[in-house]
Image (tube, rainbow, N blue to C red):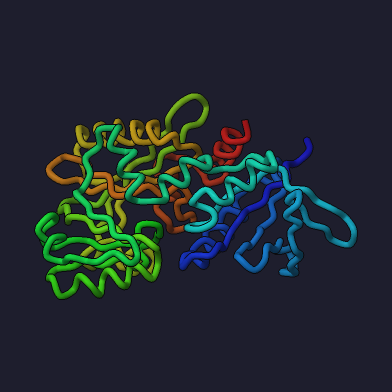
Length: 325
């Protein structure tokens, strides 16, 4: 059987580049070598390079998404997008592969762009009937009326970049004096800032995939951060407990599953997606959607796949076979 030549796209232009690379190395190690011939492709604004087994790098020809070694040309047949943030999660790379008619692993152009924009994502997800925190959107250059924001949302509240991930630029604000510095911090990551009311409850994260004519909802993970919320240190420096399956009632689990499927449908998602919630008084409030979730050995979705009895090799075979159609 001829092996499919697969590009594992990693890196990108956001603060999450190193996180992306860690997950990509894990996926590279588990892909089924009887079906796929994988190559890691590290991309950023300056260059696109294939990383060969001897750590030599060769440039990608963007005209046809290929590379050459000693005069031998290899054209990629499939793109496994593992970049967090721009350009892998916001529709930019998806547009490139659509133009070249190369199948890829994530949501399409429109869904990627919408889900990456937290404010637009919430507006779209509202049609699913899911509960959402009240919010306030700021654009760079807007005048900021801190009193009006607090009157609408109350304290404490969260300030976050509208288009970013991994909790970069996120702050929990407890008093009015903290609000402007938090907004400036968020603007360092994005041209828009989303300010949200604080919903108290249990942090829940759950993966979902449509494959084989059915929705596969992974066992939910309960996140118990050592700090006040699931920030960068909690996510990547071990300062949290991640309990899979989550300690929630069967009724809560069933409701969460229904909401996840409804959100996935209304936003026209594709491939593997992770959705984060706060479960407050048995009501799941959607926080955000990750269309290229973390995939290192200790990331949330790999934990959930293991709890489901699915290996990462099986999971990525499902993703590729479903999205190549």
